[in-house]
Length: 321
Ligand code: NAP
Ligand code: 8YV
Image: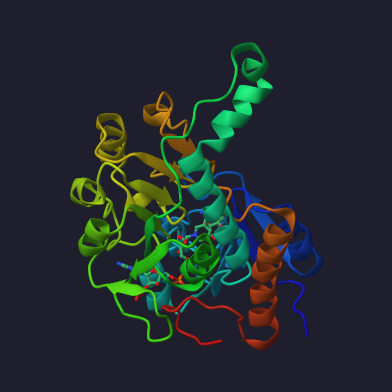
């Protein structure tokens, strides 16, 4: 039986399909901003039993929701949720794995090609009339051909990226904390060892305390002057000032970023560089994939409030699927 009167809080923006589907079954309470104080009166705070979240949920807000049972996160990465705090309170946290693997992996390959072959800049050459006025676009200094690619994070999405890279005839290696027994790609037990060996580094790891700024001066130097760095994981994994310097002084050749340390960003430090390709965090951003993510956010909430079962809990959560 669906409990229509369960109150679900939506802090800040979320995919509209989440809101419309939630409204069919729950009392939906929204607050405009995820920053500052939680702008809810005491009676409403006490009613909230679920949160549907895209972005960050402040730990202080969770403290102010005494009857919260579940946080349903829009996105596979749940770095906006304090899972230790949630687990200590017995609050379930769910996320949206797998439904976005193909989209994100496809985008990673697109960003890799855009970065190496400068295709967005070439398109702009045509659109701005410069092809007709000035002649052919400059040859790209870099090529994907013959490259050796190291994937940082060979999880659900990393594996899809690796499989997409196979027809490109590049060498493929990876670094994770635990070696996988089901793949034949070259395993590197440290990021540094991988960066020394490869010339192309693709990051698809979660944003955690352990991965904070692990793409640093040492790693970029190890990648070297022919090096290409692609990030579709989390911007917090990168020391952006160091990356900017590395792109300016030729420590590495080029970078492609879908994610940034702070989002949204104007990416000011990178804007004048011609050896970077940037996207505004769109790796999963197609209508079908975002709809599937939205459905999973809502279905986890329905599952919990109907049957005390969730479809896709995060590993740190106190219940299993
Ligand atoms: P996943 O299946 O959990 O894979 C994560 C991978 O990272 C695993 O191979 C894991 O292996 C590795 N890893 C974790 N911590 C590590 C560390 N400290 N050092 C080295 N490797 C580490 O997750 P997923 O579904 O593939 O998603 C990965 C991440 O991509 C998400 O968390 C999210 O932040 C990001 N993402 C971004 C977008 C976008 O729009 N740009 C879209 C989707 C996802 P070990 O545990 O063995 O280390
Ligand atoms: C989403 C993502 O863009 O799933 C993730 O971890 O980064 C993306 O798919 C994001 O979560 C939506 O805010």
